[in-house]
Length: 259
Length: 214
Image 1 (cartoon, rainbow over the protein chains, first blue to last red):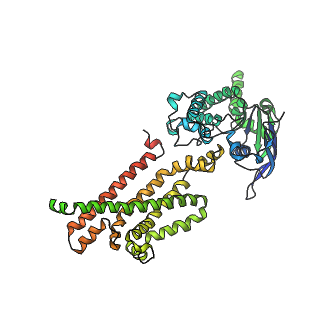
Image 2: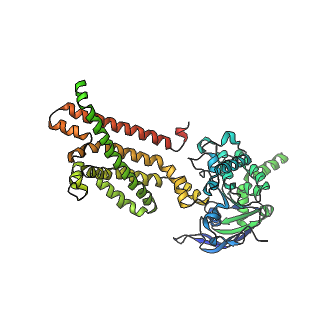
Image 3: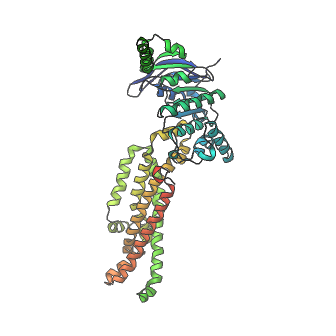
C-alpha cells in the first residue's frame, strides 16, 4: 500500500547555511494521525510545511500518495491539502461563513453551494450557522476561531490535513473539548493527519503514531504506548518533563500509604 | 450681502464646478498611477525608497513654481487646465503612494502565508485578502491627497486655469475682501465636504475589529 505521506531523507538548510531538517525519513499511513512532537525550534513546523510546499526541502523528497510533491501543480495541490494554524489564521475582514468556503470561492464554485457547504461544516465543528455564520473573527472566542479554522481546512474535502499547533493558544479545558471534537470528526472522515504539537498528552490522545524531532533530526517514530516505554534518552526526557504531575501524585500516594 | 450674492452667485457656482473638475481629474490620474505603483513597490521593496523619495521631492516644490515650470512645456502649456491637472496630480501622488505601500506592507505576514497555503493564486491573494485589508489605509491616503489638492487648486487660477482661486486673486488685486471670501469660503467648504465624504467611505471599508464592533 502506498503511504499517504512519505518523507525520504528530507533535509532543509537555509540560505545562510543553517540546517533546519536533516535526513528525515518516515511514512504516514492512509487515514491515520501522526503527531509530531519536539521542542520549539526542533523543525516541526518546517517539516509540516514541506508537505504543502510552503517550504522546499534542499535534499530528499516528500511524497503524497506516492507522487513527489515537487512535481505537483502548486495551486491545485495546495487546495487539496487542509491546513490549520495556531490563532492568527482567520481573515479579519471575512465572516465565518465566507472564510470557511474561501477555497471553494477561489475555485469559482457558485454562491449557493458555498453557503450550503460552509453551514454544513460549521455544524460539523459544533458551531450553529444561524448564530455564528455572520460573525467576524473578533466576535468569536479562541476555541470558536479554531473551530472555524478547522472547518475551513476541511472545505475542499482534503485527503491530507496539516495541523500546526492548532490548540496551542487555548486554555486546557477548551483544548480538551477541541481534542474530543477533532477525534470524533476524524473518525468520520477519510483523512490523513499530520499534527504538530509540543503537548505530549495531545499527541498520545490523538496520534496513532508519534514522531519526535530534536534539532531537525528524527529521534523516534513510535506507537503511543511504545513511546511511553521507550528507553531512548531524548524520548524519556520528553516524557518525564510532561508527566511531572503524575510523578508528584504517585509520590504523594506513596507517602500517604506510609503514614 | 444679498446683492453681492445675486451678483456673484452664478459665478461662484460655476467656479466651484470648475474647481471640482480640476481636483477630480487630478485625483483620478493620481489614483490610477499611485495605487498600482504602490502595490508594485511591495513586490519590489528595493525600489520603494527611490520611488517614494521622488514623490516626496515633487511634494516639496512650491505650487506656484510648479505651475510656472509646467507652463512653457509643449502641448501641456497650450491649455491652463492641463497644466493645473498635471501639477495637482503630482501633489496627490505621494500620500496615495505612501499609504498604498504602507497599507499592504503592514498586513500580518501570516495572513498572506495562510492565503498561499490555502491555494489562492497571487491575484486572488491580492484581491481577496491584501487589498481589502489595506483599503482603509489606502483611502486615508486618498483623503489626504484630495484635501491637499482642493487647497492647491486655488493657486491654479494664477496660470488661468480657473477654479475658486479666480475670485481670490481678483479680490486680492482689487483689495476687495468680499471677493477673497467668496473664493475662500466655498473652497474651504469643498475641502471639508470631500474630507467627510471620504471619511465615511473609509469607515465603511474598515476591517471589522474590536474597536469598531457593531
